[in-house]
Image (cartoon, rainbow, N blue to C red; front, side):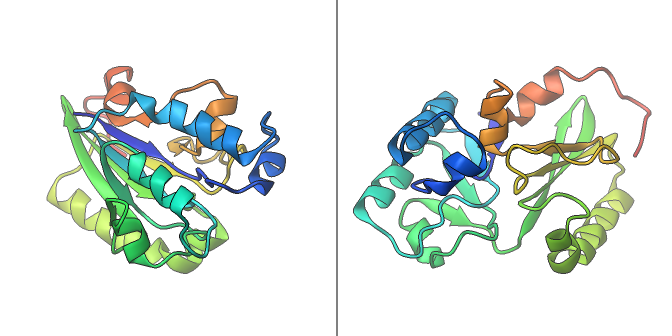
Length: 202
């Protein structure tokens, strides 16, 4: 079993092709390319979707079919463009997270901590919506057991890099990773490729 993290798929959203300067001629091409990138997921994997699955304000047969076809245990942490009612996602076998973030502890030799949120650190939306809650929960976890390193997994910025001061922030937007010729983010694969960090605390 693996944990994948991805965001901003914007299924059936034609304008995202222009906004992110993607080489697709239609939403059908966009949808298919994202499905191809998600084809690595096995049925017992967990996939954390960090918001903006689609801009749709109401469901359709095509959208339901597509979302239902996605493999794995699907968890949605909402972004600013997830406008459907929660049951529209749950009917497609998504678990809709109650909070706008999740802090996941992951042990692979050492304890690593992953903050997962649609919004990058220090963005206006982050400061307005979740900053205090995330900090309080992170500090409580650190008091219980300090992590070797904390990483921030985010969407929202699409093909733009996060600002340089946030070296531990990782853009998991699918269009960003597509343009960088990277697969969707996998926590286990990421940790396996890290140099040893034992004894170095954030």
